[in-house]
Amino acid sequence: MGLKQYLKNIWEAVYTIALGMKITARYGIDPSEEITQQYPEEKRQPAERFRGFLHNDVPRCIACTMCAKTCPVDCIEIEFVTGEDKKRKLTRFDINIGRCMYCGLCVEVCPTKCLTHTDGYEKASLSRGELILHFVEPASAEEEEAQEKEAEPEPAPAGAAPAENPSGKEPEGTGGEN
Image (cartoon, rainbow, N blue to C red):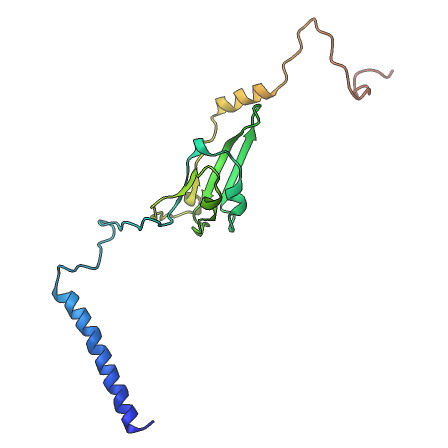
């Protein structure tokens, strides 16, 4: 490296530092061009197509499980029951936003478009359990008992004949042997 190249490198360094300081001085002197936002007081408005937290409109959801199948990190957990009318009813719809990578694949495959991205981006927490969003409220104990009663077969009336045993075998402990 010759003297000419050495002086050229020095000149380039001085020029780029001066250019950077010019931009810094312009923003430092003119307070009308404020760049910094005071974050907790002034919240940033995300862009229109921002992919924030996921939200599920539960009444519109048909429990097809397409979102859970498409999710590359398995952050969506769905449980459902099939009713007498062959329609699925959600019993659990949870999204672990601590695991979610906000790729939007689940939103794209939702046939009813009930799963959407919101503009929310703040969710600091001290435990991982707080990062799980529950969209279906757990059934109360009374509702669970009512569902169990519906599922149980009704007892036969007192004067009715006993039900036949389809296997043809006598149940153990009935006293058939002497």
